Amino acid sequence: MDQELNKQLLEDLNKSGFGSEMRAIRQFLRKEWSCKGGSHYFDEDENKNQEIDIEAGKGRVEKCENGRHLLVSSRIVAEVKKAVRPWIVFKRPWNNLTYTRNLPCDDHHLVEPLSQRSLSQVCGWKGYGIHESFKKPNAPSRWYSSFVKACKAVESHLKTHAAVHDKVGPLWHEMTLIKPVVILDGILLSASLSDESAINLEEIDFAPFDFSYRSKASTKDSYLIDVVRLDHLDAYIDLSERRLQALWDSISPFTRL
Image (tube, rainbow, N blue to C red; front, side):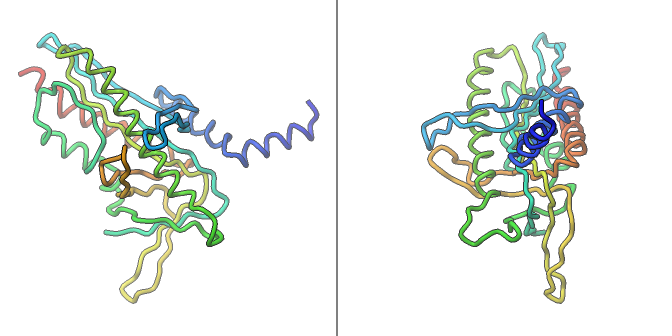
């Protein structure tokens, strides 16, 4: 291939965001997660199939002493955004999407492993909006559309997952956490006010959001969405794995009662 053409094609791939998606998928695969790009979901509001950038998952399954099987898994449904201009998160000092089936314990036993290993607990705050720096006032917000897309995709994924797994019946115990994520290939900052009402800017790697959104098909009122910088996706995957292990440690003892 012509060297100049090769250079132009690579620049175009990176500008389009496909290069960012490829790097994100590689990080999941290196951590031994199942991961695929270009996954589809059904948008019930638009009544058509849509594409979501990444669908990744990891789980653990074992046969229990009671003869059933226990499955605990984590699913990440993610949009990938490449941004030349910094995103600034406005922050303020559980509404997780989960699928459960025949759990051997009550749901309240899962509150601690779900909340204490969450990104909002690690950061100590939640975001409530994003300013895309230097964006023209009449240009559409990329962050908002990516959040809405992640919400719809995770709702669709949950319904599809439940429809398939419900057929297995009472032979399995299951806990699956399905998490909407936006992976940002760019600069991420937070904005907060000091005691003197001055605006403080700080570069950050992650941002947990309590995102309010409701439509005909999306009825949860709010969604816990994590924004993760691509350069720090490895650390986020590690956090997700620790959360998965905590869920396993909380549920598995009840299968031996």
